[in-house]
Image 1 (cartoon, each protein chain N blue to C red):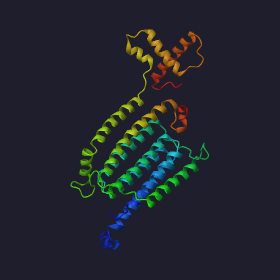
Image 2: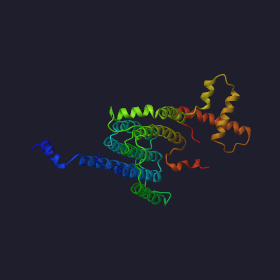
Image 3: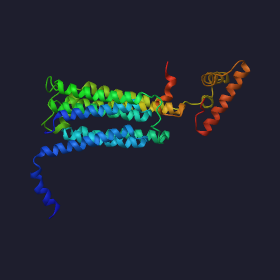
Image 4: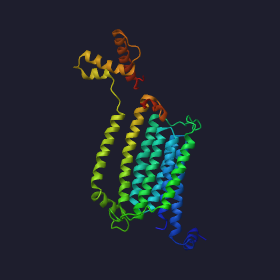
Amino acid sequence: MSVPGAWYLALGAVLFSIGGLGLLVRRNVLVMFMCIELMLNAANLTFVTFARMLNDIGGQALVFFVLVVAAAEVVVGLGLVVAIFRRRRGTTADDLHMMKG
Amino acid sequence: MPAGLVSVHLLPLLGTSNLVDRLTFGVGATIVVLGAIGVVISRNPVHAALMLVMTLFGVAVLFVQEGANFLAAVQVIVYAGAIVVLFLFVIMFLGVDREENLAEEPLPLQRPLALGLMVLAIAGLLLLGIGSKWSIGPQSVAGPAAHQPGGDVAALGRSVFTTYLFPFEITAALLVIAVVGAVVLARRLRPPAEESSAGGVGGAAEDVGAAEDEGDDEDDEGIDSTEDMARSVAETVTARGRSDSDGTEAGP
């Protein structure tokens, strides 16, 4: 392995930040979910990099679990989006202001 | 001269696999970052989903380069094959695949603040990575990753079914809960008229009471007397019947 692990970690940091930026600036709930997926992928990349650097398969096992949790999260989140869209006719986060206490 | 001969002669010139590795990393990182930026700045949600696919493929390439072959395959199958398709399905199902105007911004300070936070996050992470030793600690808690019999697939399988057996079983429960939650959330509530016809034995008073409760939830403007209430219940029931025949929900 000739590419240093630090490069992968830096790429993971950049990917995570881009995902966080999208989560902050976008208003479409679906695109916000996609940005969450970007952040999860950045975490996965970091896990795999540390699994290689420490020579520990546990990092890859954690990525496996992150994949499962991401799938469950997307299913429930998109179910919520469909349920909200039936009432509100819109999928921007600003349409959910009636949920504030 | 055939092209294959040139490449055969050029490969030793290019040096070792070092350069190939770095080239692969460079291509993969470029794909990942371009796709991520595309997700953030594309106006059409469908384009954002396709850009997400591009990023996921780039991450899969990097996984392969790091020796995580099984995770690369799962990344493509689960993420690009299932999750993005689910995204596209919901986008098409809701019909929200129109372009949105990104120029309009209700909160004036939001974008500069978000950009500043992003730069701060990258700088902080890189400085922490440079200044401190992150890759330390006990080695091989769950077994070594490299040079295992059966490759990374067997090593990952042994790890998941021995060290991480309990979390693995918990994920089964999590998936069942997610399926049940999705069904409950996406379920369409039956209108009360259909319930009364399906129930049969239930008295008329109970049906009116049920319709009254639902009616109070939805349109509670100016119901003063019992006649008004009865009329509003009747209107609600007829509206439900109409909407049921249309196949659409009666919005408030």
